[in-house]
Length: 251
Image (tube, rainbow, N blue to C red; front, top):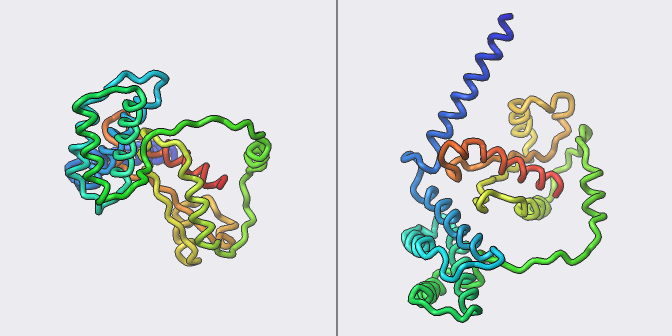
């Protein structure tokens, strides 16, 4: 009976710890570095422009307030923290201009965007990696993918040989194709090949008893809580992280 009560108490303890972590590190927390908060805020707002452009029939000059916010926020952002929000924003704004040029539209906002992009050309040269693209399935057979997924299983006999770092980076790059809410890309990968460090980490994980000594490459997937804010996003880090982890495993 005591064991059951202790386990129930543990559930409440974990929930409280989870809440404390989210309160301390979520994007609304005043204790989080401003550059980290701006990183995700700019990405989220730039993505709303991309979403508008991806609709079948975008409304001309949609999202004026969003566009001006992205330009203003990016101007205040420290690109030394990371160029990713700049790439996403500038790419989205460039696609916004291209859409309206094709539609033959004219507006002072479009001139404002054009001038803004020219200012950024010397700070972050093209090509910018944001925006939208046309995509069509090319009719290739899905046999390879079906074979890969059907052949996936849990393995308990592993090779202790360390993987080539270049192969690790290749696998991570493939896993980055995993879907991420509003394209936040908050997942992080930590790789370990030192046997002592691996054993210490697996002792925390607790599910590798009996074969831990054969693990030569350990991947720990985490998610930056700062990417999420508000009560509705409290568990989103686990969803994004799990989608990424599965793609990393397949990669």
